[in-house]
Length: 267
Image 1 (cartoon, rainbow, N blue to C red):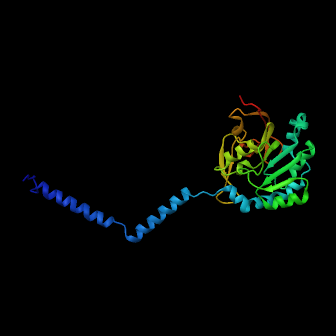
Image 2: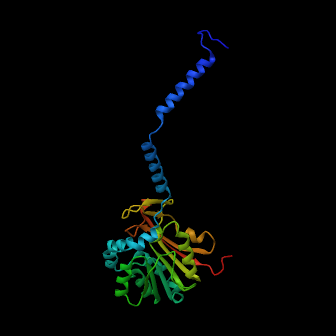
Image 3: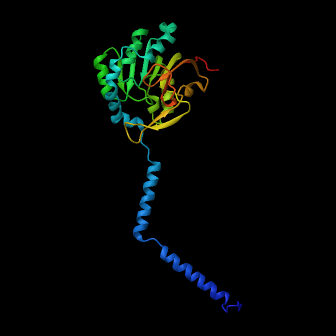
């Protein structure tokens, strides 16, 4: 047996040390109720991390109508639109080639109607708002308007000479955005034109959507989705602000209309 100066053996000291540790651990053990609370908190945290609200579905269910009611008066009040005036000016030399136009996110068809009048073209539009489509079909019976989303277009391949994203891509669910890009490409003819009206920030980011908790506005350069692969060429881009026809100093308020040409042969 090994003795220390104070007369205690190493074994005695070790036994006392582990006995103290055991008593401390017993005192720190959580109760059954505390365990249940901790597990509930963990499940709620995991659910909040994994749960996802599909924005396209929310707009189909209710927020599409909400957006239309908030903006209906402003849209109907305008005699002209800066973005459609830009499209008309840039593409005026191709009027004879543009016979069928699709607007994605058309609302009640006011801007689509403006484009169709200028190009003397047939107009087709989709929007997730049943109220907007109903209003548009009553006001503009010559247009073909339907309830649908950008990621699931109810049209055949190569149906259109001009496809126009009317300020809607920033609200498309991130799980659907590549499908929306692919669908627009599918229905646009080779040699056709694609116009995109959307936010144009200095760098991509997302912001909470003010009108519906849990949704986001995704701001980025959406023309890059098309031009990066070499299949589209940027014909023109005009920058302005959300609500005015001049450039916005505030990057978060910058908006642009980009007009792209779909190359008949990319390479």
